[in-house]
Image 1 (cartoon, rainbow, N blue to C red):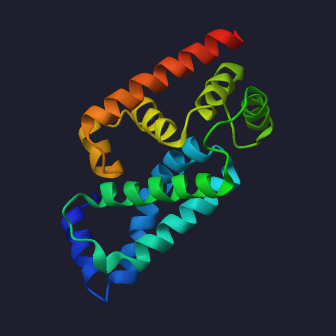
Image 2 (cartoon, helix red, strand yellow):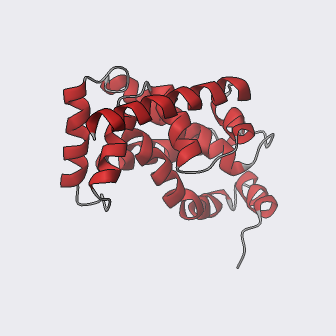
Length: 181
């Protein structure tokens, strides 16, 4: 059975079918959103918490969704904003020292839910040194191959600014990896 967004939106708008339709939304987008969040916040438990907050916020604001963008774009925007809010509250997104960033790789290698190798852990360590917005742009582009036009809708930023952020982030990640190799 395929996913029909128009039908889903109709069900979400109807109070009689809203709850069941939202359960389908959670099922449809849960894993994708989890990985978008996880690449930003890094830790599995934190990603689970942010994902739950994302769906709570989406549920609470369902009546505000004006369907000017796709449902997935709206959910991604909430997830990214919740991730960035989480990072700001944790104060670990801005300027990690090299020692703190090295701890990211160690944390990932010890995480039962991380299935990467040491090269992937080093990449994550490098990404962890980026400021929160650059980290978000980098992960959305590098891992999700999200188009700048879509990212622009999610992050409410111009495509030019996103391209510049991505370019700077790539250079910082490259420099970090070369320095650590």
